[in-house]
Image (cartoon, rainbow, N blue to C red; front, side):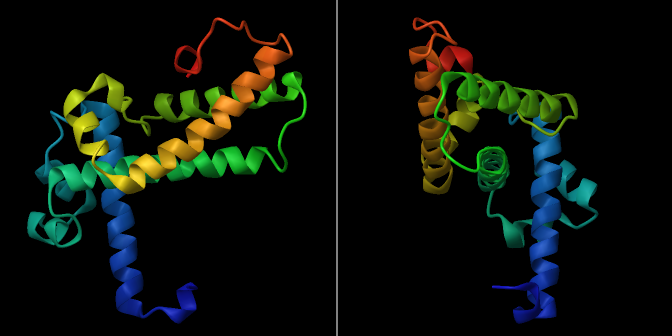
Length: 166
């Protein structure tokens, strides 16, 4: 659906929701899930807390939306840098390094929350959130393929697991 085919009200709601998710992402990166409050997110966006709850039913739903957005960005980055499947271990290693560089730049800019494995409360929420899990599986499949290709070519040590690399 293009911007021209949706109503002005829908465009405003979509823009507000995007601003809420962006603010939540920044606060998750800065404070973490446990310390971030819905009040802070609403204040950063410049809306009332009640307005925020029209978009997201809970802090957990908001955090999940922020993590889904982050996964969408990661997948877009992967697809932007790989017009086709890498065929060499050297290219796979270059792609891995590029993705790590991108992620570190986001983290340094305060735009990447700590990974869910570092926060058990957020992890529990995300493990029950199908949109996040779908994106995680897609990203993991791509990265796993790159890592395997680089390992087979001797570009990465075989005993380094995908979890160790990312």
